[in-house]
Image (cartoon, rainbow, N blue to C red; front, side, top):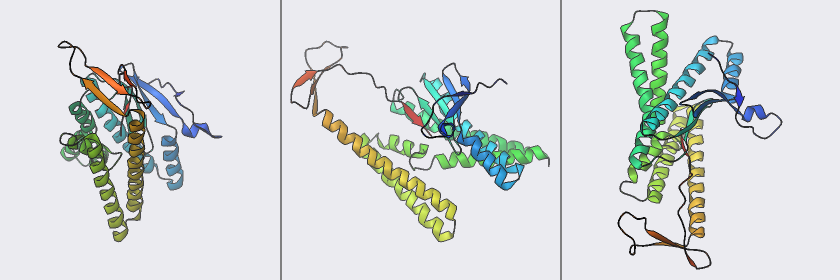
Length: 280
C-alpha cells in the first residue's frame, strides 16, 4: 500500500521531528490519519532495550486498539453527518478531532460511546474466534489481541479526564444540571477516582499503576483550573445578555442585545461556533 509521509506540524527545539505528526492516509477525503513521531520511536526504543521481538508485537497491538477506538468515533460521527478533521496516533493512545462540536448532546453521547464500544465489540469477536479455533499460534495471538482491545475499551470508560468516561459522565449530568455544575461534579469524581487508584496502588505495591494515577490526577486538576479561567474570561467579556421576545414573527430568530464592558447595549449577530471537539 502506498504511504504518503508528510509532516503535518512542527514543534520547537533543535529536534522538531519529535514534536511532529505524519499523515499516512486519508479517510472520506477529509479525515487525515496521522502518526506522531514518538509512537514508532518509543516502540523501537522498547525493542532495543528488551531485545525481544514480542515487545514490538505488543506495541503494534496497542496501536491497533487505539486506532480501533478512534475509528469508532469516526464512523459514528459520519453516521450523524459530522465533519471529521483528523486522527492522530500517539505512543499510548489516539485522538479524534471534529471540525465543529456535535449538533446535540445526544449525538455527542453517541460519538463518545462509540469509541470504547467498538473496542469491546472487536475484542469480544476476537475472543470468540480464539476459543473456537484449535491450539495454533494464530488463535493464541487473537486471544492476546482480544484482551488488549477489551482492556483498552474498559480503561477509556473510566470517569477520569480526559478519558471518554469523564465526557460521558459530564454529558449525562447535563440533563439535570448546568454545564458548569456538570463539569464540577465530573471533575471531582474523576480526581477522587484517580486519588483512590494512587493510594490503593502504592499500598499494594503497584507503583507503575500509582504513577499513572498521579498523571490522571494532575491532568484533572489542570483541567479544572483552566475551565475556571475560561469561565471568568467569558464573564468579563460579556456582562449580561438579554433576549427580546417581542417584535418578531414566528420562525424568525430572536433579537439579542449584549451589554459591552462600557455599559452600552448593542445588537450583535451571533457567530457560529468554531470550537473543535477532541475525543480521546
